[in-house]
Image (cartoon, rainbow, N blue to C red):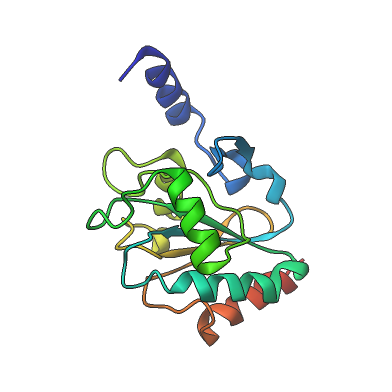
Length: 180
């Protein structure tokens, strides 16, 4: 670990991120995006992969995004290669795959580590439950979903086999969108 990374990690341990809005991460095209841009919106964070049995969820995630985006839902696709090397591509390759195969229009971000000792600060926060002990634990596989409220707090978490258009997830999204 280099000196700058060491200082950053020390700062993160001293000043823990308390909401999604405290993070800045890289978009799939290499720009920095402050997630405070999503303050007041409901956010679904999903670790995605191009060569997974759940990859078809890109289509239903896009449908979910189209259904609820105007009401305030944002989906953040986070490519990860942590499970069976099912996302080996570069960010450019992933972006091309998502746009040509699934017509993805929701925000996509740069590939990051979502489990283990090298996981990104965002996923360290998400898997800590964001202060909710019932939501803690490592990501189990690709397409695990974290629902974040308008205030940036983790509301709930859904395993990979929970379909994006399932009544369980859409009911939680609708409740989060209706919350003040």
